[in-house]
Image (cartoon, rainbow, N blue to C red):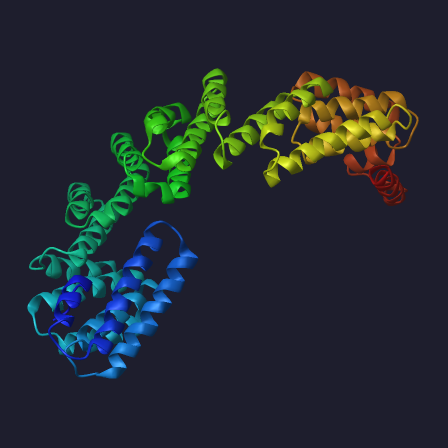
Length: 443
């Protein structure tokens, strides 16, 4: 009989061969851990645990290939191989396990994972046929829950919504370990099938499940996919329970920040700022991420160096975090180069490039490029600065005005190149500029 780890523990006290049993028991424990890692999206840890299952189950089987624990070892081996994507090896292990199975329920449990294997190789029809046979007589347990998850996905793929949703609801009632996996599947399919009510229900279940915190990245990705489908304000409303999510401090901070991002995308900047600051005023990594996001939003709108100083003030309380430290250093570099521009105007050009490329502060970078072009209009790189200002200008009227200014530089290699004409001297100018800018940045 294919036994659970608890059953194996009980039997061990009454039979000889506990060393043999221990291999199977340890493999069962490793499999449970691997499944927890897989469901939480910890792929590397899951892979390591499945490999551990394979090693221990194979060791146990080799000890006594005809013993009472041999079917359990082979069943574990097959499931671990299956999760690793080794479908052929998994099927071979299931064949061997089924040949030794003593109870009808054992064969039905194997049938569930044969169905999973069939789905993996693209045989959805065969998978549905196998899982239907298994669910017709399989007793309660993890295999039954996995069978409902599989059938739910297949039915939804085939457009059989009522049956598919029923199966996804059924699985967590059988095995609580599938709650997050089932809720994520519900959310994914709700987005796919354009069912916002079910998406809202799925997100509520996830927010109320402490185990879902480890699947934060998946939840956030699906929330953003839902926002593309129904709009960010709708999904921000779905996440209204984020403030009280049962995810621990770090997980709760991150999902609250996800909601703030959606509010910002919806144009509700005041609510977005309020939601993000509620996280930023906390402690830890989540607070640092909120401050980083608030700073980046502020940088997009920054118009002058005074606003850069305000952004630095937002960041400094979380300055120990590498990403925050890096951004503060870039802001300091823009300040330094801008000050240098008072003596050597090319410092403003260098600061403009950092503001544009690294700070993602387009309006500020436009001002710096124009400061250089105005200071040295006869320099060969003034035209490049004007072209750069055009690229980051927010409005067509502004861009038209800047294009008019380019008329003075109509013979510039930069203007000729931008118009697709031959531009003699372009490469030499670029090389000279690169050297000069590097010298400024190295001071």
